Image 1 (cartoon, helix red, strand yellow):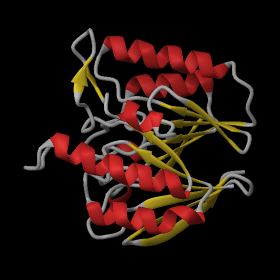
Image 2 (spheres, one colour):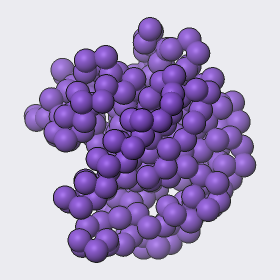
Image 3 (tube, helix red, strand yellow):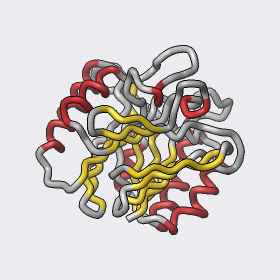
Image 4 (tube, one colour):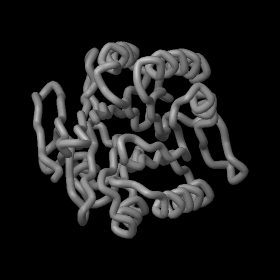
Length: 239
């Protein structure tokens, strides 16, 4: 059972094209947030239409799991917090998205939405509590921001991770947490693409320019992870 993980594509269409070319070789593709680019001159509504088409084409090739990031919001909840409402359309097309719990080869995958304040954070905490009681061989979280106080959230100057996520990891001890958000963490001194908190392995593939995104391939049978970037490859046994 092989899973391909990327994050922070930020409307880089050549990297979406690369993902389309690779998708059929994997049992699942996971995108860990920031599919859109709010800094782009292109209207976010146009970006959403294009990305939705990519998601539909990816879904036709393999199982697809997508979480939102801070660049993906297109609406507000009752507490005036940013939410990615457009991803609901992807759910209707058969994609596992924010708030979903997917089963993959005995692994339970919890798809965490980007939280923008106390209300959406409380909803995510309730989601984790609910999924904690579900049967599984392994538990995997997709959460755009990495945990705080970890090399996977190191910017080169400061730790920029999510302190609440770190507390949830310590409480529930999932097997794997797949994140992104801090683009340069794997490429700066004392940063990394991988860390361990208790028994939980946490990951951040980082972001790079060019037609190929940084990515991590997980073999859930052999429990290995292989990170690929412009700097080369690195692999690790997770057993």
